[in-house]
Length: 114
Image (cartoon, rainbow, N blue to C red; front, side, top):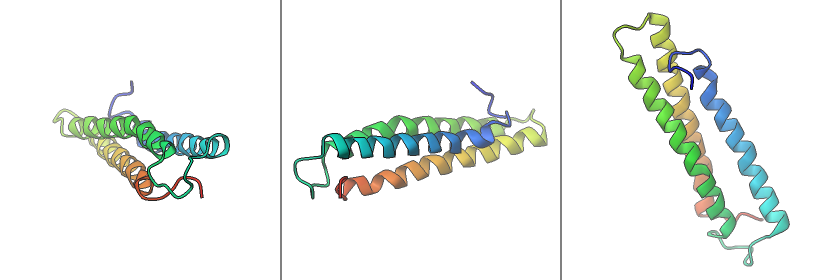
């Protein structure tokens, strides 16, 4: 695993979010094409539950990385550059986790296959 002060941390969170985005919409499309839910207007179908369950590990990992980066940024022995990288990485991971949460909220109220 990369150190919290590694420059790749700056892009890692949003890269994981982009991967989640592709997996999420692929699963949604395949689910609707291969086995659409019985009731087309039901918001809490098996597809929505699957997508929410698929998102939870991504949220957990992104929040863990945000916390890990933020805790590393308060280390007194870091250079200014390393502290900057850790703080920005923590923010990027937090934004990516928030984006995942924001994207799954409609799954609680909207039907998946319209």
